[in-house]
Image (tube, rainbow, N blue to C red):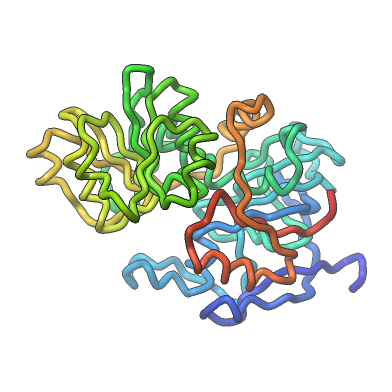
Length: 338
């Protein structure tokens, strides 16, 4: 490998984790408004395996075009190695992290170098290493845009109007389903930061983790159905989502809201009868919001849970770990040493 090439994970075909190939490819160059980042770590997220599988979880008419070969991944943390002439917010040598080009699919994050719009990046919190920083962008921004501030006006694919987060305060109870995962553990902490009483739903193995993050009540879904023991909740953030999300509608007070992270069908009629709102959104890259989240990370107000790490060459093992489920925090690929 020479100085003009880098190592990256590429898809030459769709399929299981075994199709992730460790290749040698040219190092990209930044264009206007962009920087080149020497990647130290890359986060592993659900869209990565959706792309690997060919986006089969979407109806055919909604699947974005995927041109192979492609480099998956969206979350990075690293050091700025080059900048375009019009970039002034970051300099060569700065440590930065971000969710790159999402909801587009051209981030190419599973690589030693990534070109990113400077507007998608924020300065890495000084108190975090690159592994923890790379774990934060997609999951943290998803929780932020669902719960705190949307930051864009694009309606999601299955909803005619943009999502508008409910204002959270100390008078409220927020239930987070799938609380131990990437989005869920950020949602728990952001709701606590806003003063809410937080009910976390996860398997029993994650109770101490979630209590430590501030959960006031823990429900082990393997032994207890949350919809049978909880009532008068102001807001449910369902990080699992899907068709089963409707089971949380009866736990809400009138005027409450259910936010499924993954769309699972319309519940408009039942929601109207109960006097509650169902709303969702699609996370967008946003360097300004990530800067706000970085302050919370730097102060220790919000922490990043790491489930496991894998070298870039073992990306297939990282995807196998994701497929086993019951993840506590995030899975991260390590690419360059801190």
